[in-house]
Image 1 (cartoon, helix red, strand yellow):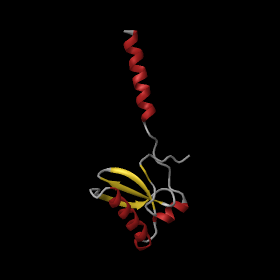
Image 2: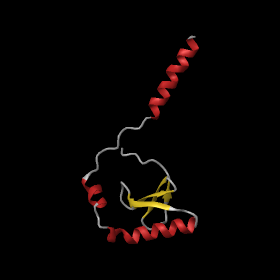
Image 3: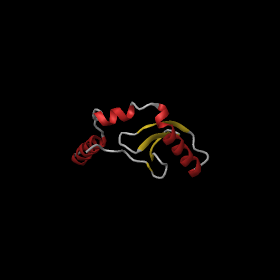
Image 4: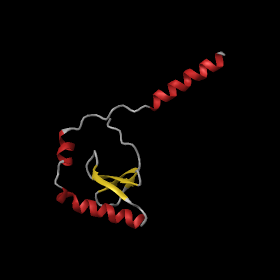
Length: 99
């Protein structure tokens, strides 16, 4: 019985460790980058689309938008969140943390 109780406590603790806090409020420089006109972002969007198509022609891009950090675009491909550099050279799939 004691083993079961200890396993339940550790299981509950491990679930709380996986919980993510709410994202912080956007700061002024990020907000101004996000408000840039779509025409200003068109070259970066085209470079990102071209890079993803070159990587895999079967990719279906659902969304391209400003990333929460400069120099990258936030891309959703088949439900997966990716970050691609504006020139299409770098790609990473990870959760960014604002430290």
